[in-house]
Length: 410
Length: 109
Ligand SMILES: Cc1cc2nc3c(=O)[nH]c(=O)nc-3n(C[C@H](O)[C@H](O)[C@H](O)COP(=O)(O)OP(=O)(O)OC[C@H]3O[C@@H](n4cnc5c(N)ncnc54)[C@H](O)[C@@H]3O)c2cc1C
Ligand code: FES
Image (tube, rainbow over all chains, first blue to last red):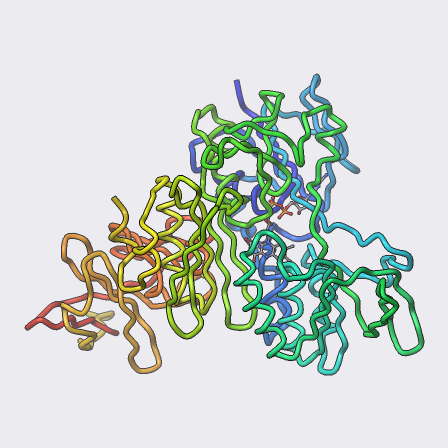
């Protein structure tokens, strides 16, 4: 009999799952354990509106006290889970009695990868994952403040845009010869780079970091080639690592994250995982095991895992979807482009465009849109639906902005 | 009748300006609305901005009786205004609609 559901991690996936358990009719107890002090909140605004909004921000809550009460979800905030005893079906908690469970969800998310160079310490290098960190950064970003961003990925670039919006200067240092790595087609990354430069952001590409120094005039980043960049605040956005420690210590299978099956179950049938912390096989991409760090995935897996914990037998196969906002530009990516052999561009005018990525057999596997959100969102969404249907639209139809994508849906 | 609020009927657009299963934006007096035409050819109107982060819903996708927000895919039933789940939890305000002489009128209070 399943009477006690326990969720570790009060983030997007954990909070969503707790509500979804109720929405799917579960009548037993639901306890969510979260080590942060706040009620569950959305992380994407931390590098966007929380930094740039006019007013002192509040955490963008996913659930407030009223909704927790309405769904009879017990939230133990400011409480870290320290161990999972699988035999006894108990979670050990910091400063509290162990919590028994019938079914357990691990939704511990990811943490910012730390920069490993001489001189990098909690005093010299900042990171952004939590609301508390966002608030501290917001207080620093005043006009004239010199921000150095290490890492030209999504979070780094959103930080640079936020700094400019607050009148601070921004320098982005990236190891690769271009921004945004493999996740974004080179042509779109080049457009994004050009926009940052037009906004006055200094981009230093293809640069390694030798060390961090502190000097009278501020913090200094010394590059591999001997150049130095001086600023007031250094923040690193150099990727995230799945939070797997509890699962690993409990002997659960790990493979680039907590390894779950297509139903989000771990190799222990009473323990599930969802969100940034887990890797799962994706049917749309040859059953390849992937791990996503994406907000909608966390939300969708939260919904899906609740059903799985209640015994449903649905496979999770939502199309991966991600967005980023920089200035008035939105980038939206549906699907994964790894299998693509060909790219077709649809020009939507005024610099807005969609790049469609086709596999060798003509199947649409991914679409990336760049432009004002209102110009690209509909087409990316329709592309996502085509991807889910494994459609093989013709390249000429995709390239022609006069042809409505809706009409290609069969 | 204590709470009878006078409705002001405003012309939003021509009926054929909206495709079936589609939406357009209509601005009036500093406010913004979304006007919908359902797959079975009925017209509806709601507030124009998503209740999550205030994005124009008219840039979103209409599927049956659902409008999906273009920003983070929050969903509403545009016939009732009901929020259909995360990330949207606050319903949309809806407005009465009349079609007369090929024009779509919405009733504002
Ligand atoms: C600054 C920033 C900007 C982002 N912007 C975007 C964006 O624009 N678009 C997009 O698609 N995605 C974005 N993301 C990614 C998105 O926020 C994540 O994918 C999503 O939050 C993952 O949800 P989750 O529930 O898996 O993990 P999280 O939201 O990280 O939640 C996990 C929670 O578990 C807690 N926890 C961990 N271990 C324990 C423990 N032992 N005991 C108790 N609690 C524990 C953590 O403290 C945390 O509160 C962004 C992320 C960040 C940090
Ligand atoms: S702004 Fe509409 S769902 Fe977020």
